[in-house]
Length: 190
Image (tube, rainbow, N blue to C red; front, side, top):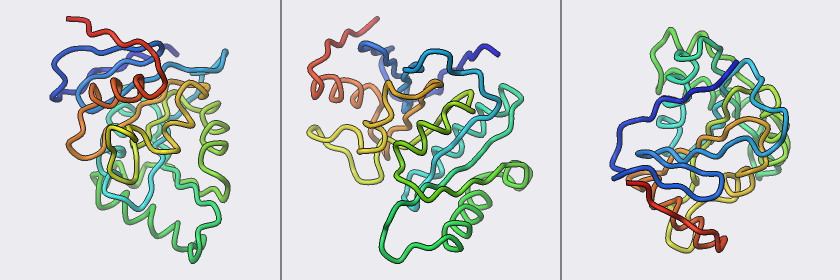
């Protein structure tokens, strides 16, 4: 199945690219970084207990509907003190029913993984048509344009990766800052 993503509306003045990434509005897209990917049958939304879950879920649910595939909502937890599996399940239920229409929330697949986020999500990307994550759970800055998870996933997934910009941070700014941090060239296509 070929993936054609509709560009969301947003504040980006025009497409921005760097080697392997494009930005539109609040979405920074990275192509699959592993050969043979993007043959999956679900859209995976990786969520955490932060303020970005609603935007991640909304974008992922729209892409799943657009492509006629299921939405799988995933929470990956490592060895965070005090977090337990039942709390992760409650988190997913809360986020699904708080952020999506009931029909979408009921139809969504749920998955909880006890692992480190980057390797777990890279493994899940082999089953996905698209992987959607937040740019960062913490506020981004010029020195930290992407969080550890988004940075670790960029260019390493088997399917395209959609990084949802946090808060009011436009994806174009994230792309420029991420490229500057990595020393990659950026061009603006007008």
